[in-house]
Image (tube, rainbow, N blue to C red; front, side, top):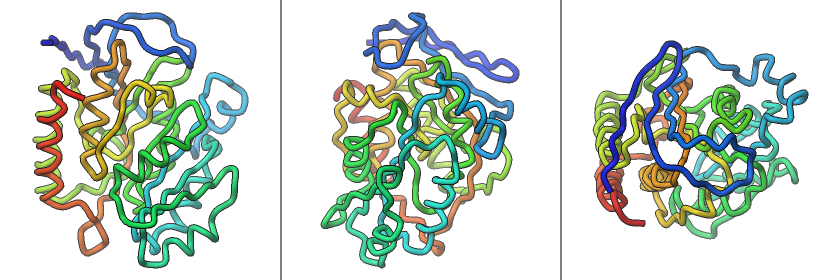
Length: 290
């Protein structure tokens, strides 16, 4: 099916496109029949802002599960979990040890504190996608967000990611590293160019107007997992999630700016050029099929 998408950027925030609508009802909805991709360039609340009081006072702020895939991140785990749990927006954090061999498992055992901090384990390394699917299956909150364990992404941005869900205005929110935001450490040129290419190609097939398809920060209504069967085990889960969210009838997809502190391979970054080619194949694979 061919879809025509018109993107209009408004100051400070919005792009829209027409799309038919019907979606499972778990969070309240207004019943509109538009697909929306909102580019919120203005500063939105982070966890260091008055969003704390809003979360307590306003029940329209959804509960939040943070799913964190972990593979050999012993150097950053304590800091990362401390930052995540410092946010009053977080209902629970689920860390999935994906067969780590560097002592991450022992650190996770120390950090585990049910019900807010839960740890799940894979006996062997299965990949980021497999770890996310394990975490998604265990999530209990209204909204789920993906958090990498390597400190590239800042949990202070949870307020930015959650704000479009208030009053059920959004179904999916992407955090973009390439929109105007504070504290961005520019990724390596070949990573940036590769991301641009993959995002452009993904947009061609999905009809979206995203600036950062490969972002880790994807937040979404948990009930959407009931209608998008996920199969990818590795980094290719990023284009799979994007393609399948885009095909949900009536899905309201927003994009907001986030902070980013990109690592180099010498600092432990795991994704490589091979993963870029795998993502390209995944975009082509999911352009029309599940």
